[in-house]
Length: 285
Image (cartoon, rainbow, N blue to C red; front, side, top):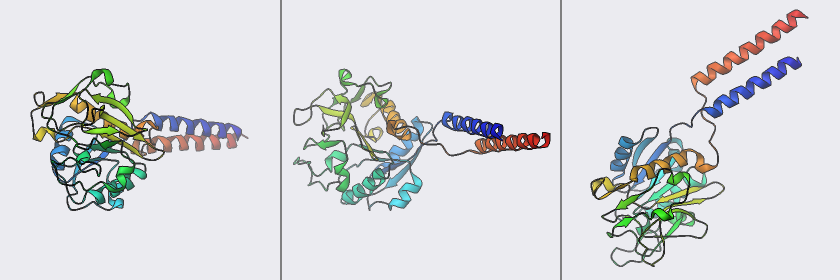
């Protein structure tokens, strides 16, 4: 009996190791925006394998939380032009983040943030509760048309910067932020923000439950310019890193992968072997 228990324990350990060795399932990423969510979802799907992208138009308001949790492992939230539903969308994305699901923010999120005060745009609507956990405040102006280039000396070794050495946005559509206390900035733009302070290009705020990233460049840049001319460098690598980091639970350890048919078959074989060995030992007594 002790032999069988030891064997059972060894089998379960082997099965656990098998499960842990498997890669995490591809992340289901909801691309939320009031405009161009479909452009981003299609563009990223064409450049990345291993993740699934679904456009979600939130111009009329957000889906309910249960729907978001059932459909997506991560959310990418951005906007293109201000929209009145931003506070409700922000509240819903806050709830999604607090559930433990990663959130990635991007341009022009900062232009609808409640502290953006630039006179060139209408009064911002704010992002509700999401502003309490986002990595950056607005620099009061937000992303502009001024060109942005990544400062290579600012790059911090991190999963979000793996393979990243350059990034540029010749038409602007990037930057315009200021890091909050407690935010980890892993790369900055070479150009300062409107307050003549460092402008975060890639930033992260990590809580016990929530993981919120901010990639400060327009994800729908392909709609406004040509890759390699108007925007480029490691643009797609930056985004891939963010999605990969989110699918790995933001460095807090891989979540247990779903049990596949192959894993179930392996477990069944182990249990049958244990049963056969137990019966054989009983018959030999």
